[in-house]
Length: 319
Image (cartoon, rainbow, N blue to C red):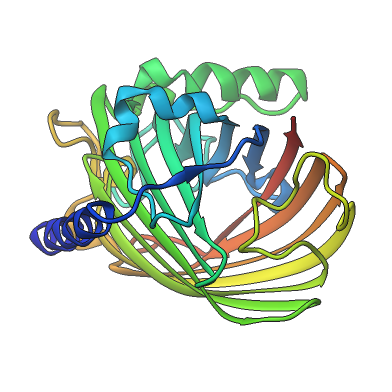
């Protein structure tokens, strides 16, 4: 399956190279700072993907980064947003009340990585294309153990047990491709098809899906939702829903890193190769600021696993 994913990536680079020989991308001058927080506390659980924190900065000067050379713009007329992000994700078994290993459950795992990304938007073709490179670590250096214990201490909650059995240190290097294609757009309703591909040392998978939005909103394929000095769409309020099917080749937070062996990781035979994910949320934006709350659920990722859900909060400021 990894060979298939690599083949698709090579095709994507080849097609883009032909386009870039004729067209030169443009840059958008707006800057964005975004703070994101995920936690399954919003679903009254404490298991599996239990917490994620990530911040993003989008600014034209990030195009000067050497890593931007491997990111792919759409075409000459596209608006290109270059960004940088830092992310930490924390994973636990189905219960954090035991310090003994359960070889049928997913392991404790922690990941932290930086990302260079490009969001390229073609308003005429109603298309968004995102490319991203992730570089980081998996293991104790990602400090999920200390963070979860600190949060539980502050909330006077039970202390999580078992982090001494988390996956050992390894490296993260992953390339991500994502495309969003408008199917129907109007003033108060939009529908679009989604496709994602991840290839690397932490995730090898592909996704297909559909997203709809409805309400008072700026066009999805005009900019990133909010814009400095906007003359219209100063106030936005809309809801959205998204559904995806993910085809899984490799998942390091469950199977362990590629370059090290762990005392506990799930075998490939235990991984569910098809995972469904559903998302719904609400967004409020006023002038340069937006706030989002989202609920996500997904089907079991491994044998004996359970349906899992979490909440997502986002605050974005345009400057």
